[in-house]
Image 1: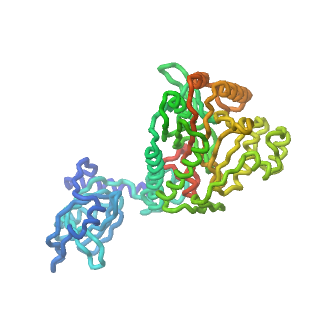
Image 2: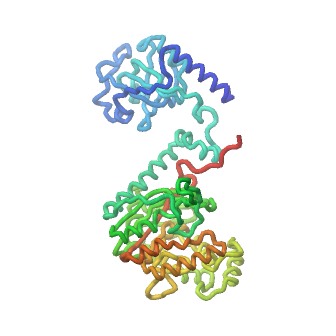
Image 3: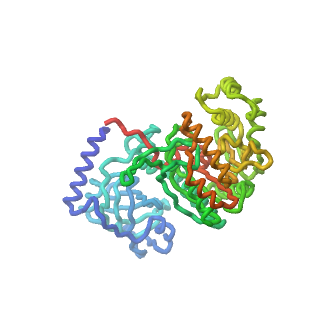
Length: 496
């Protein structure tokens, strides 16, 4: 019976059979005494031994719950495995122990994927498997559709992402990946808290999208009758206002949104962490970030060496520092501080780097840098980024063309971004004006002129280091495209 609709009809009939037998196939009441993991961990104290008739004597009567993952019958007995999200355990149904009616009800109406509750005693089978000898059972939830590996399995990548719940259910590796992702953010959060940072929450809806060069999503606020933007940074300008307010260390972990292209490294809706550290600069930031990345690698993966595609790197190595302009000149021969836009475009064409014809010089330089970046395994810190592509970073005192910005580079990609934050309101005002000119000329990723932020800086912000990192870092450590590491990625609806 390969037709899913036919399978569904049969299962619905089984559901009705269970109802007629007095069972609620979608009950809200669950009574279990142990998780499956607790039962196996405490097996020695809980278990009994079968007598000559095969009935388990002594031992403690316990109740377990879970989803049926296997079923196999042997005449008057049936074995199955149930899984409760903590562990899997075997159940043993003996016909003369739970009476013929209940046994037949079970073998004729329970399918893989159903959730059941079973009461009985633990024992060790002749093959040495910890097992619950069932004395009574009941249905908790009847699954109307069969789980994938029962009929064809999820092979198509698009279908896996669309039905992620089935992908996780049937693929232990994917399930473990999201356990690691949870731990990834837990380690980062606990690391920052231990360093004295306070977790904060800043607005997700903003009157002016700021804190990054990105195209925002626009929506309408009915109560205020105004257009607002979904945030494109993790509260960068808000957190810097908190530095003005007198908090010395803040951070936020949350979702942010950018209405841009999708590829192996970029999504429109993703998790980001940003911290702001008063009375610190980018040198302090690099020291802290290196320590944090190493801790994440050790605590989540138990290692510091990674091989991702063609790249191999060890986070335990010394993190060298490379200069933005020097690296581009070394790899392409272009001096970004003197080259014309025509010269840069000529080089981009020569290198077969895709770019739009009407890009500003800062955007063309950025395209050139991205070509160079792909040749770097890391781990290194990129420093010396030009002022033109770093509108929120403090200028380098030794070279006013550059900023005190730092970016960790791993496996050919930027996996973080930090600055000695610009706290000069006059300089910030001028840079916002330049960004606004770029925006008015058609660069939708350029930043808005945020006058309220400039006003906040006029009240005085201490020297501050800011840093942000997205879940791209997790995707890189997993060696997967970022979309595959999102638990429920945005999908285009199926045609009706």
